[in-house]
Length: 214
Image (cartoon, rainbow, N blue to C red):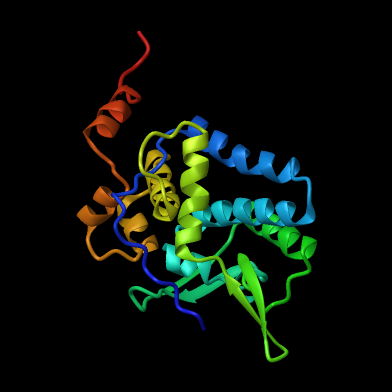
């Protein structure tokens, strides 16, 4: 298996914190897919959209996300060993995520051994070698899209994972459960990781009123 090199030297990435911006970000990829003029451009745009969709909904680290193969997701149940921690991730995907994955697999007739996000194919001595997109390429895909829709902070592959965490907490999810989802060992690390801060706490405070109608 080709190992993905770590991509260093970048500033800390941040999550998207509002649904409207997130929707705009996703529609950017769908628009590129639907307006593609060639089969190659169509595949690349579709692949990039699925990279973002799966990244947002699995909260996998970049190195684990890019190494996903069809066999890892086709049955709707994910079981992988994290590259960084060596810990297992085991969970059933929602139908809302699994259905578009199946459609993507069928559209491009991917086999169970294929990478989900193919970058290139090389023939050496008559043998075919297929590689997934690199972490550097993945970073460019999401960061350029973020810039195109007006996101003014550093946004990379880990931002997908962080966005999942932030949105999970924002929707009322339990921090200790998120900590387990992300395979963190410390609660404070999790909250710092998803950039949950004073502004978020104050915003949530105004949404709560405990009283009776007079």
